[in-house]
Amino acid sequence: MRVLVVEDEPKLAGLLARGLGEEGHPTDVVASGAEALWMARANPYDAIVLDVMLPGQNGFEVCRELRAADVWTPVLFLTARDSVDDRVAGLDVGGDDYLVKPFSFPELLARLRALTRRGAVERPAVLQVGSLRLDPASHRVWRDDAEIELSTKEFTLLEVFMRSPGKVLSRVDLLERGWDMAYETRSNVVDVYVRYLREKIDRPFGCDSLETVRGVGYRLRVSPSC
Ligand code: CA
Image (cartoon, rainbow, N blue to C red; front, side, top):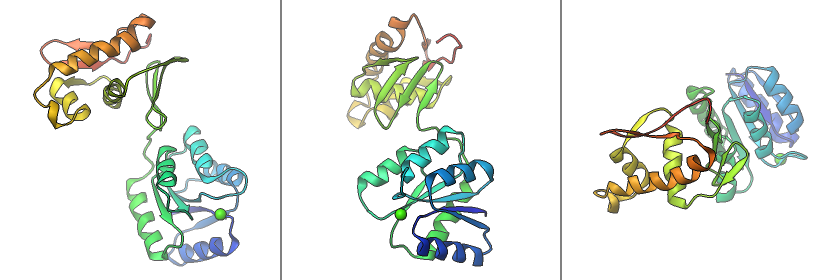
């Protein structure tokens, strides 16, 4: 596998490049986000090892820009801090895994192997279906540029629909993915929330994207107009 290492500490960068090279993996090293963005767009890497604490743009910002530029190479973050916030932030910007410093080289290799088995899968951080956009990280929803206020439950249900656009989802499907066990037998709760959602994401915009499929369930239509 060909690897890009983005690390501003020369000693660690050197160790990684040498270690990966000895394992037969061609490795390029850069020390800044700007260089990383340039290199990652110009070369077909199989994985990027990305330090979070970089001068200028930090690793999260670099990853976000890569994904925005349609670069889906798996990213393994290196973080000095083992805070939950860092891990969450890393995954939310489209990273794939993280390793806390100090780490062992065999573990880095194992993580990279796991990531490259998966390959570069397109997985946008923000979901989009037609003119609807949903950001799971910030819990925000828009139709075109208009932001829509949703309750937690409405948001959860819309996210389920937006992860399966164009697919018919039964009430049971929706209950299982959006509600806990206590609601298992109350399938009418789905109808109620679909109605709430329509009032917010469709009606004000003259859309009817949440379609009822008689006797089966609901579908989030993919239409060019909405
Ligand atoms: Ca650093």
